[in-house]
Image 1 (tube, helix red, strand yellow):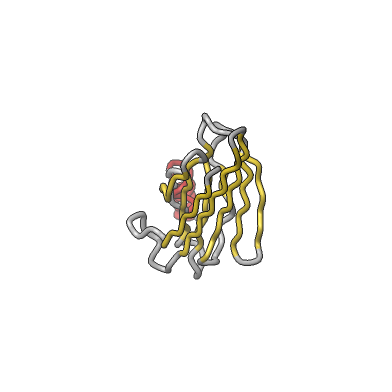
Image 2 (image 1 turned 120 degrees about the horizontal axis):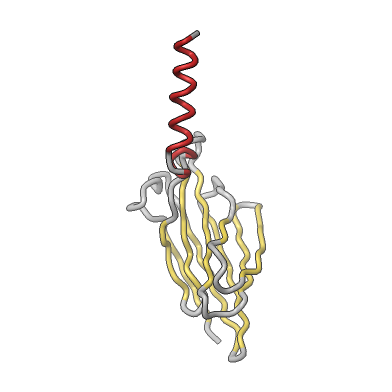
Amino acid sequence: MRAAIVLGAVVAAVVIFLPGSAASGRQKQYTLTALADIGTVYWRYDCVHYRAHEWSLGVRVFRDTATTGVTYRAGRLTRQRTLQPGEPTTWFPFRRERRQTLSLVQATEPGTVHGRVLATFDRRDCWPYFTPRLSVELYPR
């Protein structure tokens, strides 16, 4: 009985004092690319909790830019967000799909800027030095 109490206390201490990303098994964010006049795209991974690896994309719009519409696609999942300049990074859900897409549209006085980021993940993309394959398109004004 005493051993169980000690073990429970040790487990609780480890969970409390470990950083959030280590305790959850999900790693910190890594920069994937930046889109001129729009913002920065990040990626992160979870290769601990499930048999299949999962990845997530995030976007942070630059402070001196305009409101930006973002559409995220992974398999049949589609999510849309409207991002304001200077907001914290907006993260999309962790997904097992290896192809994940972000489409960004920003309307400004001079014209509309369209950006598209396609990240194709591989099973080895569970380390910060193995970045996903990346395709970036930017259609300026």
